[in-house]
Image (cartoon, rainbow, N blue to C red; front, side, top):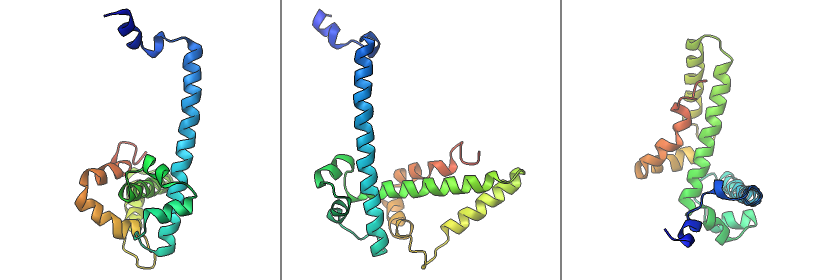
Length: 164
């Protein structure tokens, strides 16, 4: 290797500590800003869904509600489908936390399992009054079109941490 190639192949451990800290500080701030922008898009999409009672909305409606740009939305999401998937995964994560919290109140493992199954059943039961379009409209479409994404979204429910 030439000296120039060696310099390009250097690892972060070879860099001075000040440089590592500066880059880390910069990337940490950029990550925080990106997370905040993504959350504004998710909050806006959730508000539009709640108003309409369905997942039948346009990306432009979400952009307008979030007070961000269309370009910014597409920097973070491939489109409406990925935005809905993010909301779906987030809803499953919250349901998992709710089930875990309820089950942890039981000392006996069988009682924990019973509480978890009962709550999962209640959360999954069709309820026309509940207006849960992410689960009633989007989830069946997602299950047929993208089973790998559904499996990934459900990981918190059946992973090793599910009943701890």
